[in-house]
Length: 64
Image (tube, rainbow, N blue to C red; front, side):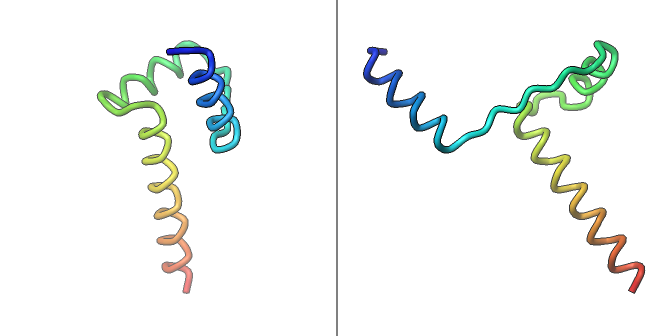
């Protein structure tokens, strides 16, 4: 990949994506890695967020 191509991809990624770094204990990291199995980390995070949102919506429905 040439410098121009890399620069273009970096520019696109900077505009459209946000990096998120986290520091956790090794034991917690290992637990997360075991839970996610074959899912990529981004897909695992998306799944967790969706499940969390569904839980929140379910809790709201139960309170009404």
